[in-house]
Each structure stands twice: as structure tokens, then as C-alpha cells.
Length: 298
Image 1 (cartoon, rainbow, N blue to C red):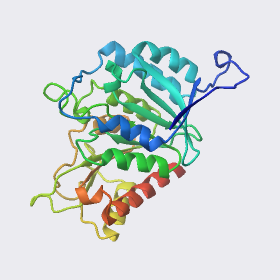
Image 2 (tube, one colour):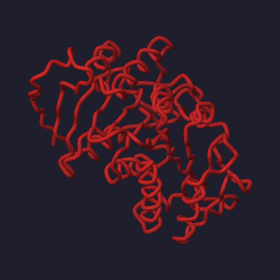
Image 3 (cartoon, one colour):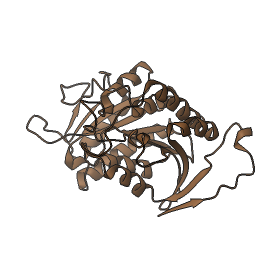
Image 4 (cartoon, rainbow, N blue to C red):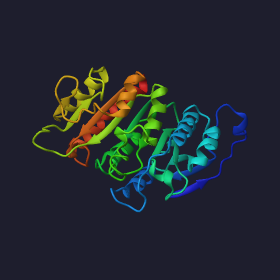
């Protein structure tokens, strides 16, 4: 269900330091996001191409304005890129979110991804889903964490990781993506990030989870606490800072950017059972939610 709501502000956003999006919608947030990602695949009528340098610069400006509370300026910058800003109210929880998404579902910007920011408090954490559909169920886990934990934000890539030429759509390893541009703007403001990945089970990966700091080889209290919590629920965890783990994310470009900016960043790889509908997945979600709640209180 989508119902457009008319704005009724008595002050003009042009004359205020902070402003809210003019577009308002009442939505089922989970359905809105998962409907967007449902059609992702390696092949399709609209191949992925990354935005050029000037477009990424404008995107960064627009996202920055929204993060700083000025939706009016964000809209003016983002609209020429084919992006809109909408204040969403979730029908299930009543929580409000600001969304940056393409204005046209088949436009080029639709394949750049989306950003969701809590509108009911300061943004204190960020969940990143760089490989929706390709890393099955990571997009759904990201949505659940956004819905169930206050004070957060969600960045979702806009294409399957194999949708572009060579590795053009593998945004976890590309700095020329809208995804990376958005994440960097959050890092500049000190927002800690949790990036979700999935891996297939195999004999050389006898784990349900691999937890690491990406390119940072040292540990943090949050990383250690997350690994401890997962293990306490019976999940096998490989700790990237104290063992040689597969899929540690050492070449992840968002992790490298976070290290340069001294922003907290955790890279979490999950086996299928830890991200689907079973008990392990429930325990994983609870553990990740505890991490985000810790960040919310910092």
C-alpha cells in the first residue's frame, strides 16, 4: 500500500536551517525495499553503469545536505540526477524514514541504489548491503535490522553484483559507485557501519559467520563482543583479527575508506543458515541488533 500524504508545514524550507522532504508517503517499508531488489539479476534489459565523476560529486553533496537536515537543498541537488527525496511513514511501526531513490523506476539512477535514514532521531549507525540478491537474504536482513533497531540507516546497492561489465557492479570493491559515495558521506560524519555479506557453505569454510574489520587487522570491543555473542548462541565464528579466515574483506573499499577516516566498520560474512528464516538466522539478527543498539547509545 502506498498513500501520498500532503505536506502541511507552515514554514518555508527555503528560509529555515533545517527542512523536511516535501514528498510524503505512507508505505509498508519492508515491501517497498524488497520489491525494489526482487528484480535484480546478472542479466536484464538495463545493464548497470556507474555514475560519472561529476554525478558522484553532486550525489555526495545532496546526501550530505540530507544528513545535515536540509532536505530542501538535497532535493535541489539530487533532482537533476534523477533522484528524489521522500519522507516515508511505515504502516507497521509508525516510524519515519527519509528515502533517496530514483524518480523513474527504469531510469539510470534506479540502478545506483537507495538510502534510508531514520527521521525520528539522529543517525547513529549504518547497515550496508552491497550484494543484494546475489548474497541471498542479506537485503532482507538489512531491512529487518533497520525496522527493529532505532536510530539507523540503510544503504542498498541498486544492481546484482554481476549486472555490469567485468566487476563494475561489485560495489564492495569499486570506488566509482553511488553506493560507495553514500557510505563515505556517512563515514565523514562518524557514523559506524556494518556491512553484510553471504557465502556458500563448503569444506574450507566450517563457519556460520566470519567477523572482521575489513582492511583493519586489529580488533575492537564491538567486534569481539559480536563474535562472543554469536558463539554463545552456538554459531561457529571465525575472527579475522586473530585467525586466518576466508572472506575477511581486506580488499573492501568501504572498509579501507573507514580506516582512513577512523570510522568504525565491521565486515560480516554469513552462511545461508545464519541469514535465512531459521533459528541461526534469528540468533544472528539478535546479535547484530545488539551491536547496533550499542552504537545507538554511543
